[in-house]
Length: 164
Image (tube, rainbow, N blue to C red; front, top):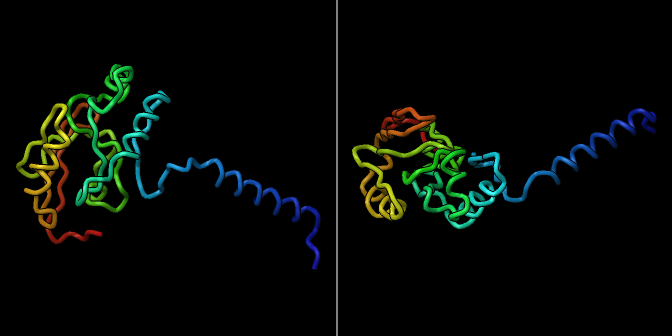
């Protein structure tokens, strides 16, 4: 059975729209992650580069960075636009991860996990990997302290809560 002319046009328009939507999605975007976005293209490029170089923190499901991870010419912009400092800040949250279940978001600055303070400075990420990750019982209760939009917040998940 032949489709009426108007149905053919509608079908072609829907196909064109679907094809355009697929092709306009950047190849680096992963629908399983929420990534920090900003106005400055240079900052977005720097964040994309960090994401290409780092795997999410195992157990927590975030990619972390601080001001020391940006090229010198972008440090001022990263401080002003994204509020980056020498604290570790979340730039990506993996959907369904522990961080996602805790309600953590890109842009949050990590202050503490359970009773362990998160280091600051140029070596903060290495110190986090060496000191915090091995000490936390990732299958137990998790309490985090973060700074979001300039305000301190606590986010917790209790042992035995449903986790993916």
